[in-house]
Image (tube, helix red, strand yellow):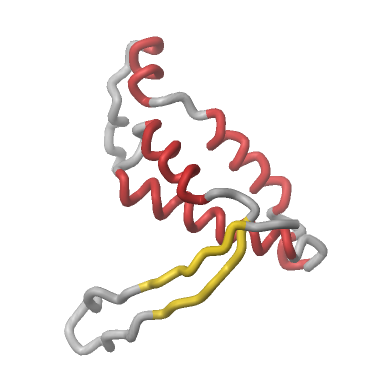
Length: 114
């Protein structure tokens, strides 16, 4: 199977608190059957999350689910295979926020819950 090839770079910008280590950048290469950049742009366009959150959600899911796909027989993934499929299906069918708010007559931002 032909794949898109990506180089992932993770930079530690600041530790959470004083005294914790500042890590050197981590870089690795990985393949994925999907065009992750296109998926991130589609996710951002739906307006459910800010741009950084959309990118983090998509990238995290795409990296994780590609490992699941390539290691599908590994017992570690047995219990989450179907729930992950259901989650991805739900994510793919989310309507853009603007369209959903107009048709449902609700506000774009859900109320915070304590």
